[in-house]
Image (cartoon, rainbow, N blue to C red; front, side, top):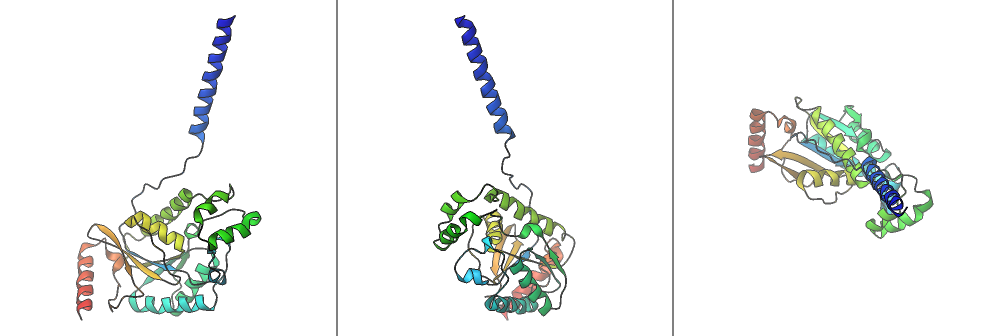
Length: 260
């Protein structure tokens, strides 16, 4: 009788252990981005300022359009883009502030070569109505780790957000392997940080209305500050980096312009 009880107990423990292993294996694990980003240079433009951002609160909780300052920042960016880049094609986040930024730039340079990309949007925080005021307070206090602990289950995880953004970048650049165009991505600071972390293994903030050139050269990615550049160099052939002869011509032209 005792042996039978021991047997049943062992069988029960084995069943529990196997069930636990099956459940753990079946649970969705965060995707890791494993594709190689095409080695094609691109420009990143951050959207302009919103009234929400003036309150020093993350833009991610609401979808506001630009305010007067944000529209001025977008117009300033448009002037730089017109002066520095030729034949641009825009890939824009679907949120209001990025679309308005992209529209202002496109109208100024008289280009309608604009494509909306759903996956270039900011991180999804889910239904935050019940904790909205607390999130706003923590955001103002820059207590981002504490914010993570109170997000609803419907919120997009950091890993999911990074996978989505990097996959969107891959898809955009992959379209331009054989094209000679300036790719301009209009998106958000958190997307910019995701790109920098993945490509150069470091991250830093980007000002609203800022413009950065992600350039692949000599086997490495580096980031160039365009809006504060004193050089008059024109980056018209940055997207021909996959063509060695044209790349050399671009480099020669940049060196000559910088020495003038």
